[in-house]
Image 1: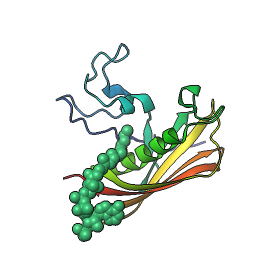
Image 2: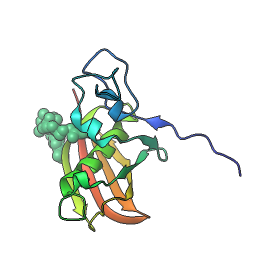
Image 3: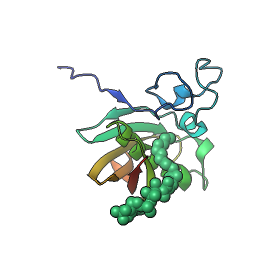
Image 4: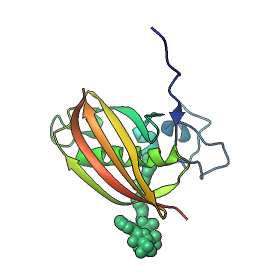
Length: 159
Ligand SMILES: CCCCCCCC(=O)SCCNC(=O)CCNC(=O)[C@H](O)C(C)(C)COP(=O)(O)OP(=O)(O)OC[C@H]1O[C@@H](n2cnc3c(N)ncnc32)[C@H](O)[C@@H]1OP(=O)(O)O
């Protein structure tokens, strides 16, 4: 079997909290016992999510996430806020992968099915359109190709 090119790991919030170079992986930004070189002021959410994104087609990114009980809402299922955070992060990361720094102006989430715990779910986002500094994206969370949640987001370029 021919091996294709290795997927390129993308993104990470552009590092504005210190002078260290931008890191490709969210969790690497925060200073802790595993990462003594990290930054003390880095975003806690970024470290918490610990997502690694790769490019997915010309306009998308993808990642995976372990749905641990730490993020439980109702018993046995992932909290909706966590689902929203993942979808938002994916859309933000999709823009970062294109060198666009933007904030979420509006986001709609459709929670299609409960997201079970202790599973590895797939996370994807794609840029749908870009006009006058307003970016429309969509994102999805799925398990074994079964959609669990989807979102649309409008992002505004940061000044
Ligand atoms: C862990 C890693 C995560 C990575 C990704 C994380 C992304 C995030 O979660 S960011 C955090 C959450 N978001 C925020 O904090 C944003 C807070 N809000 C803001 O800063 C502002 O309201 C902001 C930037 C969205 C819009 O500000 P501003 O540009 O001044 O708004 P406004 O003057 O009302 O609108 C400017 C233009 O954008 C358009 N616009 C703004 N919002 C929308 C919208 N929701 N839909 C359509 N158009 C919009 C307006 O129509 C207007 O266009 P025009 O001037 O042509 O009429």
